[in-house]
Length: 431
Ligand code: FES
Ligand code: FE
Image 1 (cartoon, rainbow, N blue to C red):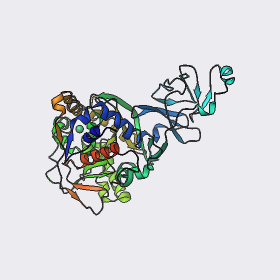
Image 2: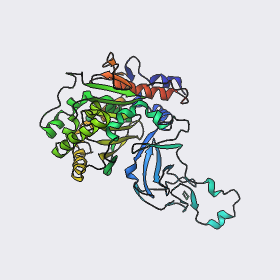
Image 3: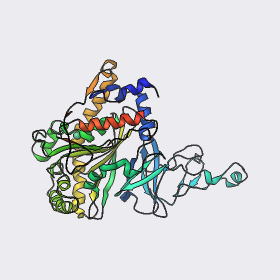
Image 4: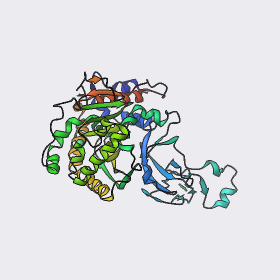
């Protein structure tokens, strides 16, 4: 790999070169060394309720078909026909007994095997034709964590549990409950942003700073007042990260959820918090719907409280396809689930008040780099350089204060390490 290119790809004393948001060569390296290697979120198990349930999604720029197989297990395959490469499944989601390619009629089972071909007599006479070897290409590994399905193209990637590491302590705030687990309520929304995928991911990783400023008028519209300055008292607020996965939060327990402006959600949250406290302890119960945001490296984000879950799918250095869903506890009352779905729509959908605020900033933060002189400048990620602490309960790297760039730095450190490392073994062990 070009050493000059790699020299751009990392923080230099808290500064980041702007070309990493613009250059095609950096983007290509990200596809190879991040998206083709990391564990990527591909589905929630609730989206695949029965054998034959399927959906199509992206792992980097590779389209994949995720299927509940006949034996109940989940498989994921490149959604591209091994004959001439046509996309095999053109639907976004549904139920099927198998998949037939639209071009020459090769047909595949739920387990990806080639079941049959059109003009089979001709193929049958062909000694080089080995049907067993011509199935859809599976991902290297697929695994789940409490309802979330992840896959990787890299057979050498560490197991999913190791990849998530201590971060599962935090993920459990959303995923571990006595309510029959979680599910995605309703369908998904897709939209396109004219921004680099990292600008969105780093925002969810740690950017509490923008909340009270960018979203001031949105908050005014939803709750009749702005967001209080979050930096005023950082005793109960944190940036935490492990292996590049990041969560910024305070311990008010309800701040994000309150923006949905729905009493049913607030009542449910408060009741639920007691159950969470019993199960996971007081501290994590206070994280449940608080002002907070999360990014699971590289591109899977969510907001506790609004409960919007999303992936930032890279579509070139200057374009990102956003997929969003709404996560709810499976046995929450139907009217609460519905209120959450609608609340998320009001706030974090393409027409939601907060999503629009962010989109414009991110597009302009990307687009400015079209200017060759602008592109040569660097960006400042130095906030909170002396905030690292040891915390008696919180695992991973912990920083005090929510108004902080600590998580953004952790995100770019992981990103940089992955771009530089030829193999997982080369990757410096980091928390
Ligand atoms: Fe799929 Fe030919 S490309 S059958
Ligand atoms: Fe925002």
